[in-house]
Length: 461
Image 1 (cartoon, one colour):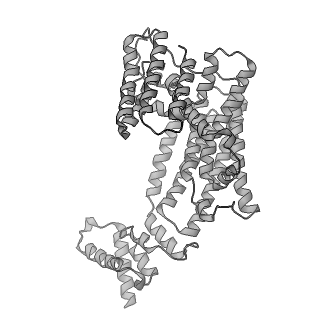
Image 2: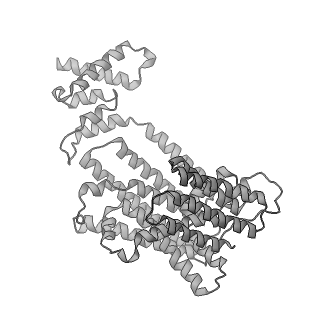
Image 3: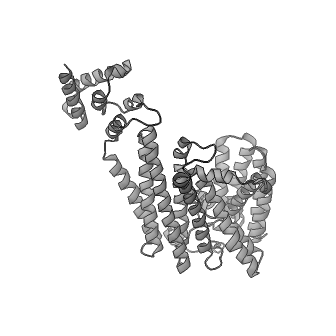
């Protein structure tokens, strides 16, 4: 049985047993069929019998448990063992732990391998069909994927999408079909980065070992994909700009709070996914058009980051500053650095290993720099000096959650009669604990807070 035939059959089985169904015995049924297709393929490939056991048996047992017991652990193990089976089918040198990690990565990065791999497996040699796969189907898949993230990150874009009648597409059916395609990719089109084998200790190559599968794409396919994603992102950015600065209105059913408080996580995931895809593409020598398209896409991502940073500023102005909203700025800062590093990678001045290393430094040093500031005092001073426009009052309960580090600021700016009784007691308790604590138990800000409280009370008397 060919890889492509097995992948197509497995996708069909997935759609039949899971369409409009919850997880149940269908997991077991799917596991049986997937195991059967895997065995047939391995027998056709003349792989040794112990490879059959190592690749298929764990998955069959895990799906049986998931279908019979239905526990969350069993379902998760079945999912992980599916990745192990895909890696073992592709190359038996891959260890189980690495195969699980690469399996999750395959669900994100390699859906297009189903289309290109199917074309190769069925020996499609028509140039027209090859162009349709490379220049239409693949960009459409990426546009659908990124549309989900952009719709979550930008409610204006989501409202515009809701105006389209998708009933004729039977979206739920195609979603299940797409999931089935992902599972087929992981089972029979598993991609193992070549760098993985370079990092392994050198050992004699086994006679039964098969090489990694890497489909061939038509020239500049990735350029078409990046330009298509750029058009999508440009529409997301421009639609937001038009509604805010030209129409001065939100789409029907969307208020200012929903507009401001949406989708930072989806934004970050979409940008990280874009960085990952570009890092994957630029492992090899890229064409000039691919470079231009990737640079344009990354620059638009920088604009998208700035747009969401401005949204976060508006949200703080209307609802006050919090640690979570400051964390959003930190995430956006680290992501923007990642985009800049990716631009350097595209220009050929950095390789994939260096990109990973510098992004690791980016994360560590950004977190270290962020931790150098006393954010509770900054938040307290800001919120007491800038009353949130939406609520018209300061959330004192939130400010008191920071412990003792901001008590002097609250005492100076807020009338004690507005304190809850438990909060009045906290100031007295802090003074007592400070006086009883030893020299080494006091932080610098403990001393500052204590001194300011004493000076304020002396002045009040």
